[in-house]
Length: 453
Image (cartoon, rainbow, N blue to C red; front, side):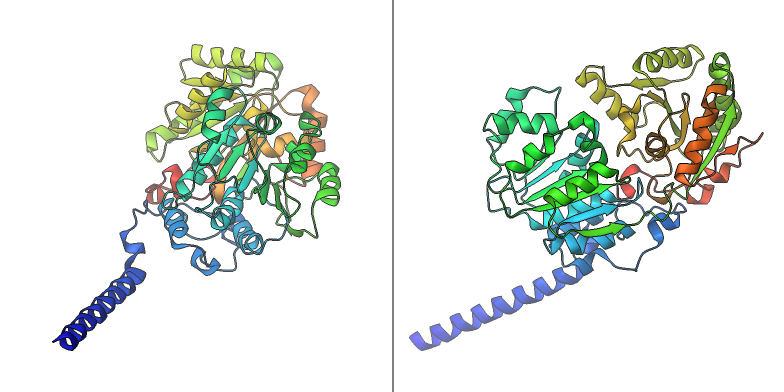
């Protein structure tokens, strides 16, 4: 009897294992079908993001939980920078990567970072440093969404927020930190942020982080990291400071350069010669003449970012635009952080069509509905111009940049054209809507979560 019972038990056990194996096999086949994937983005994309080798995310041997987050974010296939970067980052090598604005750099580093984090270890394992508070919030949100099926805790810490709250949060389980340089150094110096086990450092917008604004800060950060670490640098522009930093801290880095040309293919650039006192009138004409038909066709929620060269001019222009009867927000670095966060959140949510900004908003900020950038004040530096116009035409989509040029700006206009190797054309009487508005048949599934950042 005992033998029979034993055989029956084995039979039941084997039967159970067989059923479990079949369930796992079915799960392997059908797991993608169970995901809540957003509608497919059918808008036209340029070769900035479509010129790939044809890889799929599954080919990178990522954890299924991470793949689930990737697909539920609406990221369909890796962009060129993601194809080039993800497998190298997963191999543990240092990376120096240069790619255009809005082509998927955030995904290029956040995916390998999350893949390499061990959820069982309750220590800080990766640090991502970005130059602005808004970019830190945006990056942390992307990482949280990608890791939604993983047991990984992502924390964002920036200046302008309560330090005590950050200290309390960091003492809890935290494995990935997204930070601005000043705040993370503060936490390190107070011996609150323990970096003994932090094996990965990511520097996004590396050229800005290595500018005079943050002089010496990154050297300080690196001195707190373990000797065996991986450093990933990403940016659209690499000045001499980046080369010096690379030679000092990176070990035989793998270099990626996808910048055969500097400007995005999907962004058409125009200029209009005006006198300074005519600028507001010109802006009013642009709004009514060129953009009002977008509302009539009801193709999509069109948003614009209008750049000024000083915080004072930002506020003055925002008031004038509001007085003209247009919905308008403004944002600049001298505003209270809580106010900045609210403006950033509401503009991304599409609650207002126009945002007047200082250069605070030029770095990495991704609002998919923005397809028009206006330089109310023309910048003096080619690098600033490149980052400003990169707020439209995100992830291979279409956009336009309009520059209001005074007599004093004419030399800067010519110089920036030469330095960037691009053409800024005179503004025509009628701008072809196909240059910056999705076609009616392509207007479905355009939520900002549908493309990788």
